[in-house]
Image 1 (cartoon, rainbow, N blue to C red):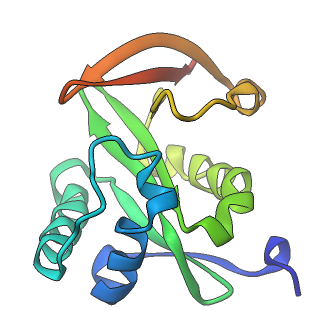
Image 2 (tube, rainbow, N blue to C red):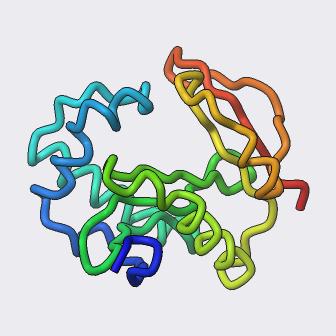
Length: 158
């Protein structure tokens, strides 16, 4: 069975072994598109990061999930509070990069249930393909800077 037809499931971050997180967070191909990290994660740093991600659910009523495809850890994605809106993040192991649109659509289908209105996406300039975002209902909203790193911001209309 190919990955397109394998079951997609969402889980708490703490349900994933720290070794899996370290594989993702230290993967050079992943780190290349994550300018706020440098790929030198330790088990302790990853464990603290996991707690923070899971804690967003208590703080905001929504947050990110770890993602499994066919029972295998694929990465993480979901909504994080950025100012007055929810920002959608999606970070996958390279073996699952072809699954992004499928996962994205599934996450966006949960917006109403979570009480989320407009959604933004922040992409580093290293990401050069944006046409798919328009098909998914996003428009370019400008540039923003976080921790001296430039990001391109896209937003839904509603």
